[in-house]
Image 1 (cartoon, rainbow, N blue to C red):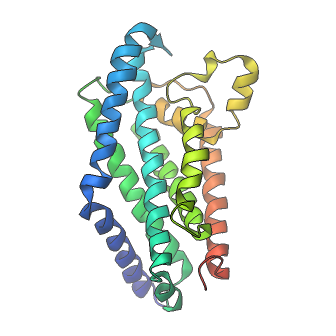
Image 2 (image 1 turned 180 degrees about the vertical axis):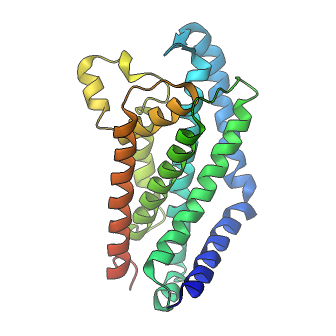
Length: 257
C-alpha cells in the first residue's frame, strides 16, 4: 500500500479518536481540571502550608509537575483503553483488521488519539495551576520530551489492556489496582530522597518515579533520579509495549471471535 493511502488511514483514525473525546469534552476534559483544583486546595494550601519547602521549593510548586504528569498518565491510558475496547465490543475493529491497513497504522492512530487527550488535559491542568502558583520552566525541551514519551507509553499500555479485556470491567482493573497505586507512590507528592534507604531502592523499581522526576526537572531543575536513566526507562517501555501491541494485533489475540 502506498504511503499516501497509509497517511489517509492514519489521519482518519486520529480524527475519529480526537473527535470522540472532544465531542464529550465535559466528561473528558473538565473533570481533570476540577480534580486537580481540589488537589491544589487540599494538598497545596492546607497541607502544603504546614509542610513548608521540599526540594528547595515551596510545596505547591514542588507538586505541580507531579499533578500534571498524573493527569497525563491517567487520561492517555483511559482514552485508548476505553476507545479500543468499545471498537472490539461493537465489532468495529474487525472492519479495520480486514481492511488493507497496516497494523502499525491502527496502533499509531489509537496511540495518537490517547496522546492528544493526555497532552491536552496536561495543558489544561497547567493553565489551572497558574491560579495557584507561579510556574517556572527550567528546560522546556525536557518537559516536551517527557510528556510526549510518557503519554505514548501509557497510551500503548491502555491499548494492550483493551486487547486482553473481555468486558468493560476489565479495562478498569489495571488503572484501579496497579496504575493508581504506582502513581501515588511515584513521587508526585514527595521526594523519594526523604524515604529510608530501603524504600528508596524499592521506589526505583516504580517506572512512574522516573517520569515524574524527569518532568519535575524540566520545571524546577531538581530530580531524584538520573535523566539518562529516566529517558532510557521510557524508551525501553515504548519499544516493549509497541512490539507487544503489534504482535497481539497481528496474531488477533482477543480480537477475532
